[in-house]
Length: 75
Image (cartoon, rainbow, N blue to C red):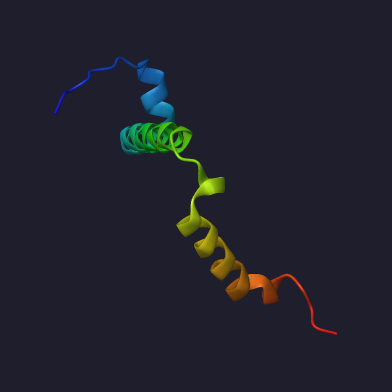
């Protein structure tokens, strides 16, 4: 693990409190990790041709059959 040290104006810590600043920084790190994961997924999707993938088309069709009642009312 790598440790980063940041410098904040004391007034920022006084206004928000040490705990809230620490929580904010932890949330920021979590968001960075999610963005990195999303970027990896997007890069993987560039190599995948879902339109010609029979398994994906079958799964999509089955999911639609299972969920379409939520979008159309029977008359």
